[in-house]
Image 1: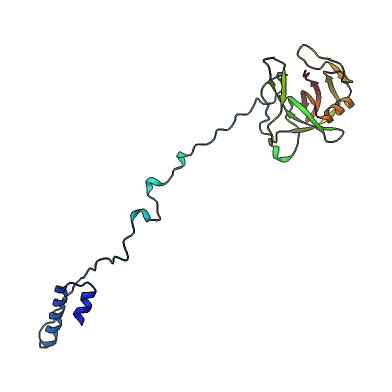
Image 2 (image 1 turned 45 degrees about the vertical axis):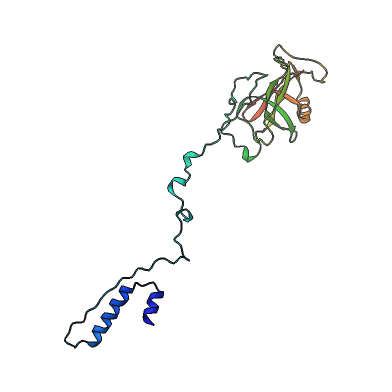
Length: 226
């Protein structure tokens, strides 16, 4: 029965015979005879029911399959427009001015001192006007035929600054809005009151060269659009 158990476990017959001989010798020999001990190392074959895992089943990916950061291409950022300075921009310029360093996440505040080609879009009270930079988009090949555009939808580029008490407003359509009062660059030439400026700014359709000094709007020169 012992031999049958070893046979089921897959132990070779020669190893079983050697074990049997060793056991018999130990039983019949005298006490003076040295004891012979046989050490048998048996390596059983792997069971078919438990196959070795295939290399591809490993949880650790091979080094060649690990993605590297160098393979990622960053989307290039769109360059900012020319910064706001004290130099008067072209009335019909085709790029939006920028205000480097301005934090637009802290609410509306004045742009840096200089001249902004912009649109007055609202009055927050009797003194503070909101404005944003604009650019001119030409149409039909004409130098002054086209329309103005502000920042794209979702862009937070906007400013707000109080109107100076002695603000200069040069209208391109007269103080009553019925005339054409412009110079050779299609800029307003008729000076109107501060109240007229507030009324125009509150309608949100006043496009102009806006001069900011000391955090206040000190001059608004309207740009004529046919």
